[in-house]
Image (cartoon, rainbow, N blue to C red):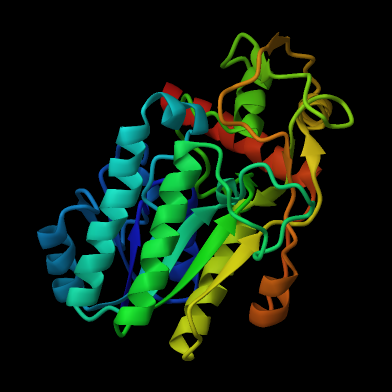
Length: 329
């Protein structure tokens, strides 16, 4: 039995690969390395360079690696970019996912975990948001992910196929053992960008929007540590293996921090008062979104281990320092 991890050389996907290997699972990775890094994949894991939309390649991997489950992380994820290039996001997310799901079903793989997003909720009127909150995405990124959720739901009705979709809130931090982290140089994740500013890799940090209807005028987000998120995927896989029905879970901690609060925490932990440039709002950004994540705790027994913003920031800073040393070598 092999678990195929698409996007397994990327940020969240590489954490999932390590989480599976730590359990003694057999793993294969499919990644086109557009944002991932081959060195992020453990050397004993089978790696295939290519696109998830390539059905012939996916079918060969499933056959040759004896794949029984797929964890699908490969995607385009930058909200403002999706506003500027919606068709690119529908191609890279929705259409590619459609091809992957089709290849999986035709090859007899009926356990599928999908990396979805809280962006499918758009601008929710009630906080925190539960899995039943209406999904009204306000960006092509969110719509592209919601379309994939619809395809999974319809496929589960029509075929011998079951899935779990995990709607992430804001993923942050790095592997506590220092094996992997967010490694894309120009990533837009707030904690990564602030950490880069703190160690001098950016001249300043841009803060987008200070006039939102929030306590300090900046966006509020629910930050979830990436290894806790990987653990949620492992539990979702166990759930499907034990016969669980198709379902959706929010993945967050249930509390929000504003952009200014996060910046202040990075400055505190790093000891560096880096410059912050205030910019206008970015297209597609919701004012605030915080998870109601009771369901995954109750149904899967998920127990986060790293629910602490200061710890998350320390992990991110350590990883940025590691990357700087690695890149300088």
